[in-house]
Length: 595
Image (cartoon, rainbow, N blue to C red; front, top):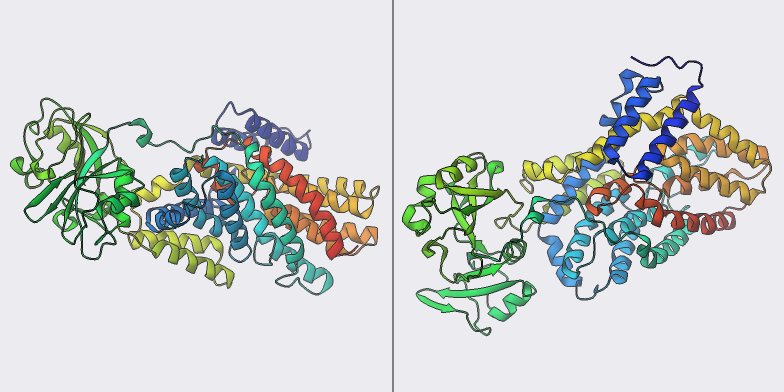
């Protein structure tokens, strides 16, 4: 049921809801997804969003792209390839300025030739790895990378949707579309100036932002001890213990070394590792996971074939051994842990004690924290039987293997988009499904990777934003623009066109902005008796460079959750960058595309 507000112009109702929504976003008292839902409800109530169109936003391409891009990015992060890249370049990128120069420069260059969200998806895991290794806050890296991807998209015809749409409209107006590199002179100048600003301007961002928290952060446990064997194809064969520990940046320590019947506790650093050696390792779970995956080591206790359970249901869970547990004073070998309960022991954490024995011979104690592997659907019942208190199911995957598959699938997807074989939505969706099919990611990991509040916000806001167009609000903006332009010189009119395109993009998305603004710009140029090219270029640049909100472009949305950003954080860095684009971009357009 809608309120009867027929006496009020629907255009002003749309403007009122959008302005109120932006005010609530800036206030920050309520969560952004809740504000978006309230805005949608208000738009339905006053009649500017028809009930049968209220939830079409949840099937919009942008929602699908952002959700599947997060899944693909998570698979790349877990592939093990990113750790190798970060390890190889980490020694050079020792401070935030260098990291931003490398990351933003790379994503900007790539975005000219692949879809900008694809370039960002590929490099986000690298940013997280560098942040972890150097102590840099991810929030200092991710937003500059998103903005760099938008700048890079302005360089070529295929870099971003606005360029392609403007090219088609130019063909309708002048009979000839833009070519592949017509955008390059202006786009390269904007990219170089923009990246230079971001290398220093990142300091404008709040430094206390943290990404979406996980249960891992709730635990501050002592180092775990785990047991591994060294396969013949492991990269750490024939290197010393000291070199092995250096590979983990000394986050993992070799507590004991077994070769056949020979055992060394606290082995000397010059001992050379050989195939089939057994190492007892100690470190935090993430460090153990990285070294096991990157060096192709094998956990002694893990055996997929022995667990008669669908692979997606197999996982790891942490638990504390209570005093009443039958595990107290016993070894896993003595109580036949796998035969009786279907779980295997992968690691033990014992506060204040070093464990140098093989896991099957360790006598467990009350208070030990253990990592068990088995059927997660049966794990709660098993822990109850063992009188162990579950802590959390954590995203520890010490059993995963390095793989180039996620990067390969993303490359195929982006190539397909560039060649026009499939839309970007289908490309990302297909890549995500294939990653699940080839088990690069489990279903649970895929669902965990998706930032659901972001998708809720997008799905709710798309119909509200579209109401500006359906109620005639954008036509009103065009009329105001034409009236204002009659009093301005050509350069002033170009700046006005670019500024309005930037301002409208968050509410219409960049493609819709071009479709609305480009005809206005062409008509505007005709009224002024000027060449339409600079004005069409101005629309394309303005629509592509939305730096003020997280909702105007999917790249901005993609980094919001992982970077822990608030809605109002974007303008801190985005407003000066937008001014730079206007101040540098308008003269550059006028130089290469004279009035």
